[in-house]
Image 1 (cartoon, rainbow, N blue to C red):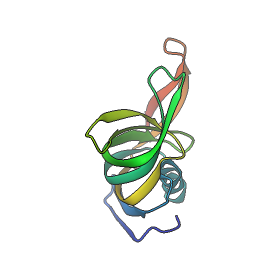
Image 2: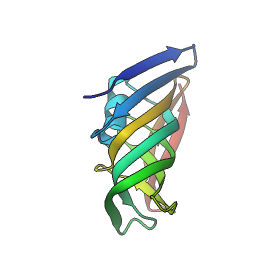
Image 3: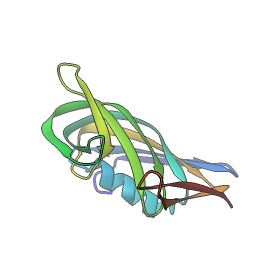
Image 4: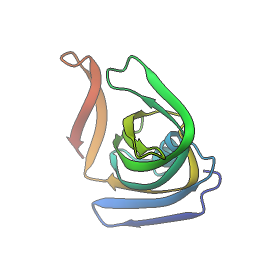
Length: 145
């Protein structure tokens, strides 16, 4: 995870908190994928992310097109469910005029100054994704372990 400057973990019998600070140039989606792999997360969620990006790549609602822009953005919200094979992450960002846009986080969203990321890992459940014929998408399946 390249330029990561701070990494702190705490856990109890049920949950683990993973806190990292990502730095300039790191790809937000790839770093989250790497954390899922490194910490062997079977079920997780993004609790918080404060920071900024210098470019975004997001898939818009309806999944038919994506948006890529290169300019400063503040991360307004980042949330998602994390499984070993799929990280379903939504992001909202604000531009320099305060306009907010969002969608599914894609690779190519690069950290500008910092991104302070907190992930929760759950030990008593497992998350997987299965195709749901009603929605046409792979949807979250939660199983107690």
